[in-house]
Picture 1 (spheres, rainbow, N blue to C red):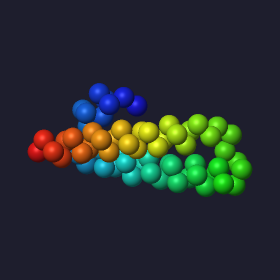
Picture 2: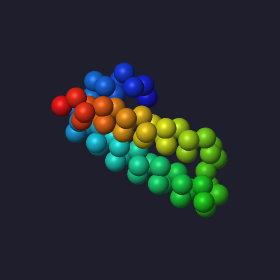
Picture 3: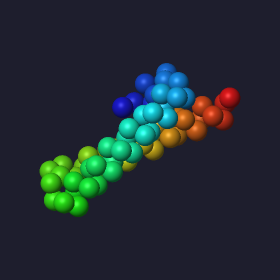
Picture 4: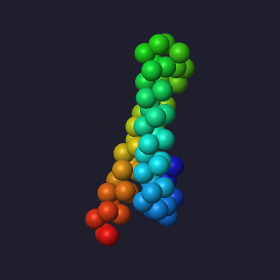
Length: 64
C-alpha cells in the first residue's frame, strides 16, 4: 500500500483501515506464537502499513 493511495482516502476510511490492519496484526501475532505462521515477514509488513496509515491520518488532522 502506497502513501499516495492513502492520501486520497477520507479520515473515516483511514480510521477503518487502521482498525482492519490492527486486527490483522493481532491475528498474525497469534499465529506466530502458535507456530502456524509460515511467513514471519508479514508481521513487519502489516506493522509498517499501520504506521503508514497513522502517519497520513495524523497529517490530515494537522491540516484541518
